[in-house]
Image (cartoon, rainbow, N blue to C red; front, top):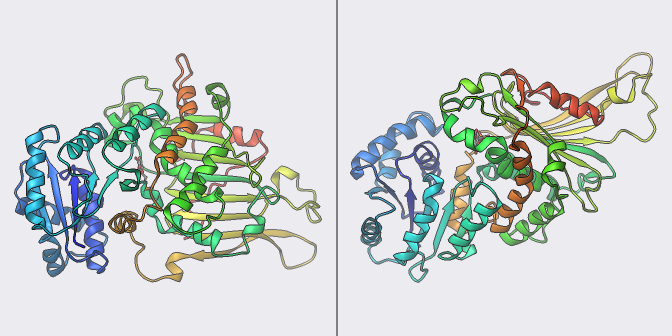
Length: 486
Ligand code: BG6
């Protein structure tokens, strides 16, 4: 069946930097189904040829595919169409539908509506699609892709879900979190569920704690206006970090399909110990990099956290008593996303040689999500020579060493999944709402009136000093290495 991808917000950044380059790469790789057309809709008055020309330049800059090849681009560009219009104007949506029908020429076609607009337009687009009968599935399937942020708290996420469900059934809704499209994130499922050697130790008997870090070197830069009302909890924790936690902590699904996988994920969130704002205040550290207040768009005296570290407990048989530390920040020492499974010390330490317990390193499995994707296992080895002196050594697997070629950009597999109707890597309504339920108490605690300013840290640090002290007080240390593989 032919496909039409309708992009709302077609003249925006997401479209030019991510969506169109991803679709172009899919087409070059022969992965995009034949007869896929892409129709852009936004207010900017543009003709087809102008939209194609502007996308050619942006795609060349963002496709990570070397110099744009004319033949491939021309083949791709022929599938691009543009319809100017205003989401709020019923006649414009009517004109869009007429254009889509003309392009589809009466042939049943699967349609994907992609919301790449600012979030305040999500509900109006859904209403407009409903009002024009554009969600009806009698001439092919109709799917809708919703970008983050999905609400700003539990109440707004519930309201948005309820609104979407007035027009689309849940099976038609694809809430995207680009972290789930990353190869190395999907590989966690392979590591855990295609191997038997990790399963027996993947639990409270052997694991002391888990650290999930998404560190970014970039500052907020020109996104100050957006970022200041969002902060690190909403920007990174509610979605990306909790998704990483779910794939790390979930039970094996009974089969690999969207509902089985998502049922297991939501169970992890359901098992996270609920906190009120007072508990949350004690279960986290907030920081702000020095210089944030001078970023354009950031109001004077803002207390928005650009760094956060929180501790969550999962109350189930597998994880009872194993803290999960989640940490993310802007302006940190390097760009690295990693999951560290910190194992327990041996029950009897024969070779401690007087080293105090807190200074002894235990086994670790480091899953390096990006950059330098791979996995590293740390274990003790005897240093050759007299005496039982040990050193931590490692075994590692690196994607670049093992596999030739570039890793697909996260949007590529996700867009393909939407075209195929596979929602395994997309957030279901209950997952999104549960995630907000977990993050909301932290947001409330971190914006309580009269609260002290977040602890400052220098750009290039691993967050504020208080974050190290907080870990030390729990007898643990952050694993800070940039990135662990090279
Ligand atoms: C986005 C956040 O969702 O993820 C950004 O809004 C952040 O603030 C980005 O920079 C990080 O994505 P990645 O893929 O570069 O780790």
